[in-house]
Length: 111
Length: 112
Image (cartoon, rainbow over all chains, first blue to last red; front, side, top):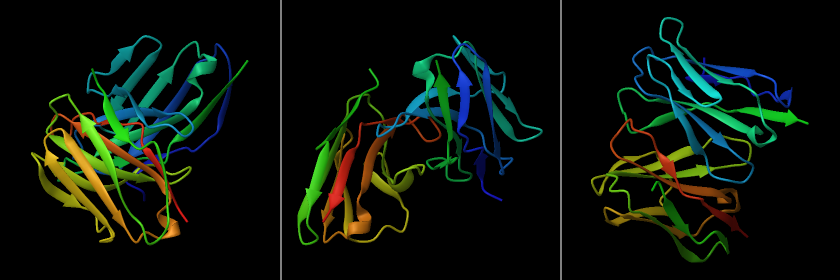
């Protein structure tokens, strides 16, 4: 089993729709969780940190489910500019400097 | 300001060349990282510096040599690379361990 698993997609979604991604992680001791987005041939950019209480930033909502060991990302009212690859990232235990990266989920928003 | 800068943006080098990649951050972060990323793959960690000391070396070949001259600068010295080393090389920094990492725009390296 991979340490961090994501559905690679692509998810083809019409503009304005709501889309959700899940990501599962294997180490129950992990403490830090993040979503990054990466555009083609660009660097990853931090989208959101994921807290135990959940996190919302505009159209984006992230949730953590420790019991089932997954994190989720919900995008409401999707825009064409949301097209990107979304990477789920979890800190490595015990070495907290290392982040374990999922392979990414590709999202394509269609007009 | 969450800015990490990297130079050069693009680099083409032969297998016998020696070159260096540079990274700078002015956020006062104490940890800096080098990653390698191949197309359609997630970033792979190469090195971590914490408080200017090398704390993690992910079994990277010796043809890659990191250097941290001070808390704001990180270099990656390249020598005798192979064509399979062609990739996007990303620098990142974070305040402390397990914190969010902020990435520079990367250096796209081609080894001929």
